[in-house]
Image 1 (cartoon, rainbow over the protein chains, first blue to last red):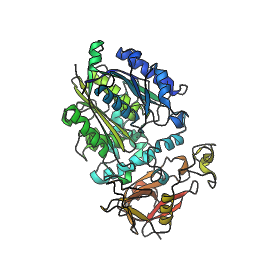
Image 2: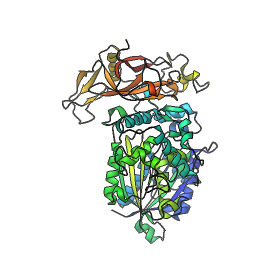
Image 3: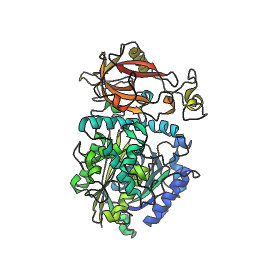
Image 4: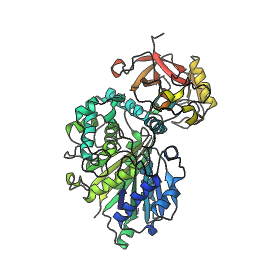
Length: 388
Length: 157
């Protein structure tokens, strides 16, 4: 397998971009990624682009050619859709393409416009990631689905709302110095506890916000980087993907995410690392309970023990294993089709040492990114390591 | 989900303001096997599709999603099921605007679990418990009258 490197990363600010079309957001992310990489656009051989609900939000299908134009690349372009894991699968295919030697330079990332829709339509749109016949028609919303998992988790393993409030508070604190984050303000545990319910047991601060944004990565082979004198010290050493039954009710266990277990197992095996080697993680905390489930699937905590990690400070910025130093989806924001790319961007900067929160992980060598779609019917995991 | 024919005031009364759901919602996909299952459930004759290895699933199915067997036979659902998990939904999608707050539940019905709305209980997190015994049936969504899989406490006539 060819050594795969992240040569450059680019993000828009996450939040509301009321007067910008999706193509303009992706153009900005791509421009920043090219600038960061020092790689000419003409060298890009493929564009792998993630987007979930563009047909609904922007009345725009067939987005990949549009995004190739916006990014200024002329190459085969494909849109990937796996709900909130859309950019994760796009990045994964870029990594596999470069690893296989089929291309030396791939542009990967994603974009989502969401804030132009009223909240109830976003709720309806996000619910499209669930099974329409058996879940959506039965009243399952996106927060409702994760609430079902939270109730099942509390029942199986214990824990309480306050444990989840600690996850929210931690991730809001992490977002404070992140210039790309949607919410750069602290939320106390008590404030999270007192927020109105969305889908009990989940309340407002258990949920990620509605976000516009884009992410872009320039993924290259190590040979290309060496030949063209491109500084690309971070390698993608492992990638894995898992799939589960679409409807939560059809899963073997309602409080676990086996698709992410599978993705993690594949990614760790490819990288030759173990969970205990991980120094820093960016995980898919679309809801606070999702961070708990993710860290357990990644093997960072035993099943049933992840719930206590934030409360005990283990996953805090100054803890033994910082999780979501970017602020996570929770506070940084969740433009769903862009999120998987933004996690890799954040992790790359954390490992390179040029992230505003790098000071918390000065010696980090191994990072892991976890991106999930639906109620984790889709999951993608990447292992990143400092190679130089 | 509205088909535009019997949707009443649709989501116009919810957060959507003056947008008419019937005008903006896509026509729902219909499936004869799924409709037949819903009709059977409504008649108290609900069933699951079960493969020789005992994996249960719900229509439409041509093969067992667990093992790929094409030999699926109908097996009646039990009279009652057990609530495996639930949530009280306060922020609904437009199709459930007038139903909220409502309780979504996943119920174990023997050969399968399925998802529906739990009625006949107070929609409050501390008023419901995992393990509750419920009967399953089909009722109307309050928002637009569309059919809805509904659970009710087993002793709740």
